[in-house]
Length: 139
Image 1 (tube, rainbow, N blue to C red):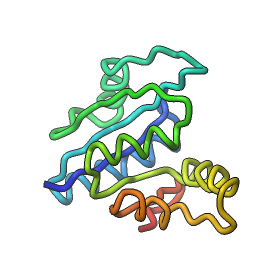
Image 2: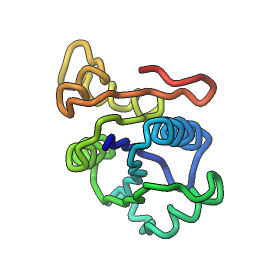
Image 3: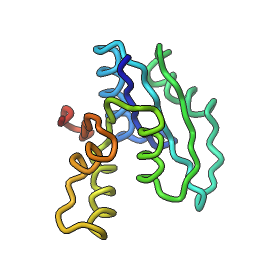
Image 4: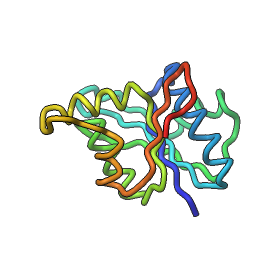
């Protein structure tokens, strides 16, 4: 079965809603399992719970079948997303354009020409879809 992983902010932002909407569409279209991930940063220590995340998403999107709600604690959002996507065996990772920009800045520290989609494909061997809040997704 296809696995889709989508990281979101909590509380949900406009960008997170757009990214999640595209991930839900892809998961439904492919009859895939969906993992909705929120990274609770140690340094912010918001203590977000899985139940809070699930309630907020179901208020926006209704009940979602074949969906896992995951809260992971970490120091770096990007690293935690990579770890979760790898652990899930993700076939598709749907990220918002803001998240892609953050990853590009992080990679710029290590590489001359960061291309986040290529980097993620190499690390995860999956399809990476970037979503802008005002546009359709880019594969």
